Image 1 (cartoon, rainbow, N blue to C red):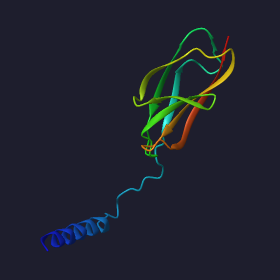
Image 2 (image 1 turned 120 degrees about the horizontal axis):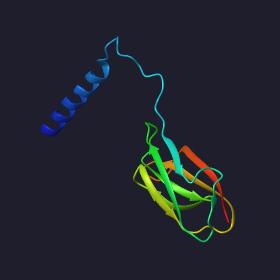
Image 3 (image 1 turned 30 degrees about the vertical axis):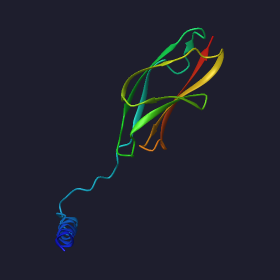
Length: 123
């Protein structure tokens, strides 16, 4: 019975807090979204097909349910980024054109729609 009384009190407080909104409280018109920046390599870069490539990045997580990011090369996931700024080493790529993408994902690893891709050529 004590637990039930406590639960009712908590629910009453929660409901009253939801209903107390000052009339002059501004309502945000936009929601910040995640942003991804490739520092290096640059879009269109030529990479050494025999060497590892350091990918430098900067990710800003917005209010769009982003938790971390995944790295893809030619639509194949090759890594996970928990740090929002740093670098990731890509193993040598086969000679030819490639697409490198970073996709922001939620805590269940589902993409939230925020991504950025660059195209590179390994020679």
